[in-house]
Length: 159
Image (cartoon, rainbow, N blue to C red; front, side):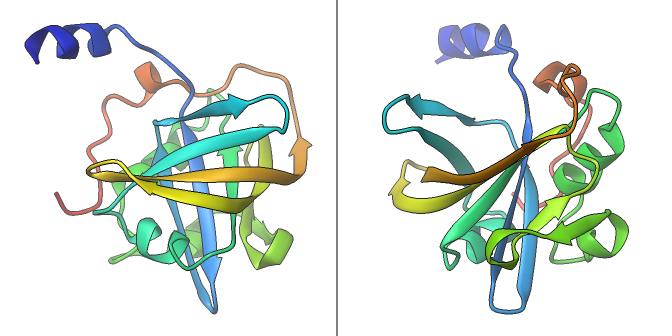
């Protein structure tokens, strides 16, 4: 496994904030494991840690919103990656609007899309959510926040 860890240490990719809503509950977290996984039909997969409160809300949600953050919004990454929704209402701090199905859309995002959950798969300590995009918006075409930019953030959810 040390060889794989050396391989993985070389990877760099955009990070995302995923938001969910179920009933009156809202949640959101920073996600590094995500990507487009089909062109036709268009599909995107996000993997959410089972230890994360967002997983508990997302597992009851029919729709998730995936946000790309601009490179200069480390503060949003810190809020959604370094704080847990068990202790703080992230949406009392972050600017947001209700999006499709009432799922929060962050106003500071470079771009976002809403995806209907079409499947879930348990792959160890994360659950994959397969999304069918239903709406999207782009605010700018600047460089998104990358994994290398957020390596200093300690995960806010319990281990």
